[in-house]
Image 1 (spheres, rainbow, N blue to C red):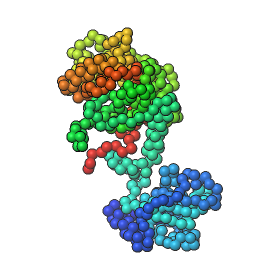
Image 2: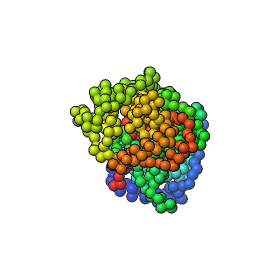
Image 3: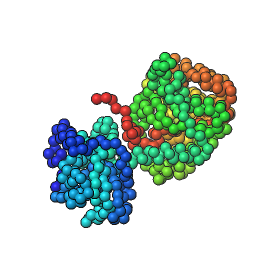
Image 4: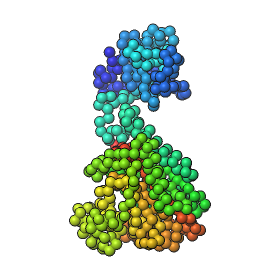
Length: 497
C-alpha cells in the first residue's frame, strides 16, 4: 500500500500543512529537532549504487516516493546526483535505532529531507539500495510536493516556483548544469589563450558599450543618479588597454530596460573580451574557434536544428563560416542601396515589406538597422556580418580604405546576431565627435543612443593600442538549446502577485 495518506485523501493544502505541523511538534516532543544544524556526512546517491554489497553507506536527500508494505518501508531519496532507494525494516531498526520503525513511518512525509546510515544491499528485484540502521531527520517539509504526474502545469507557476520546477524536472536541472558548462568552456578557452578575467563597475554615471535604454537608480551615499551597466565594462576594459593590459575578459550580469521577447530580457549574463594589438580579422578567427569549442564542450556537437523565425535552420558550426557584406546583403534582399537611399525611401520600402517600426527616436541609422534586421532573418549562417556603416557603429574603428564603414563584425546563426565585435575606435578626436552625434540623437528622443563619456575620451588621449573587442550573452546558450532565453534563467523575474 502507499503510505502517503496525502495522496489517498487529497486533502486541501492548508489541511495538509496543519497535519505536517502537528508531526513537526511531535518530533520536537520526542526530542528531535526538525531543522537541526549540519553537517551530515553523505555520499552521492549514484556513487553508492555502484558500491559493493555490504559496504557501510550514509546517504541523504529528499523523500520523493514512499511505500509501506507491512513491516518494511521503501523510500526514494533524491539528491543532486540522482536518487537511491533506502529500506526501513521493523526488525533492523528495532536493534539499531532508538525511535524504531513505527515512529519513523508515522512522522515521515514526501518532501522531508532525511539522512540514512546503513549497508549497501540489493533487493530481491536487483535494485541497488541502502538498508537503514539509523535515520537522522534533517528538514521537515510543511508543504506537500506537487503531484508527480500533474506536476507544475503552466509557465507562470514553473517560473514563480522555480525551485520546485528544478526539483521535479530533471531536464531543468540538467539545463542549469549545461549552462555552467557553457560559461566555463568560454572562460577556460580564453584563459588558456592568456586572457585575464577582470571585474568592472555595474553602477555607472554614464552607460557605454551598447545602444540600449538603461535602468536608472540613485546612489544615496554620493547623492548621485547612476545607471546599471548595459555592457560588461566595454569602456572600462578599454581603459585597461590604456593601462597596459593586453588581454582581458569579463563574465557577468548586465541590464537593459527594454522589451521582452523569446531572445531578449532586461537582465542577463554577458561575456566581453578585449585584445590589444589585434584587429577585427584576428577577432573573427578567435571567435569562430571559441564558438566551436563552446558548442562541443557544452552540447557535444557542432550541428544543430534551430527553430527560428518560423523556419528550421540546419546549422553546422564546423563548416566554412561565410562573410556577409552589410550593404550588399541589404541591396540583394531588398533592392535598397543604403549608401544613397534617403530616410523616406527606406520608410517606403519598409512599408512595402510590411516591416513595423517605432517612430520614437527614428532616424536614418535606425531605419537602415531595421532594414538589415529584416534581411538577417533570412540568413542561415554560420558566418560574420561585416562592413557596417559608421552611422550604426559609434564605437567601431573606421576602415582605412572605406572610412564610411567600420571594422565591425556580428556572428550570424539561424537568422540572428549572436555576438558583436570590432576593431575598437582608439582615435580620441573621432570618438568625441561620434559621442557628440550620439548625443544629438538622444536629444531628439533616441533613448538607446550612446551617452557621451568625456572621461573615457580623456583616457583615449593617453593612447590606447589597436584593440579588438567582442561580446556574447547567454542568449547564445538559449539559442543553441532551442529555448526562449527566459527558460534558461535560473530565476526569471516575475511580477508580484
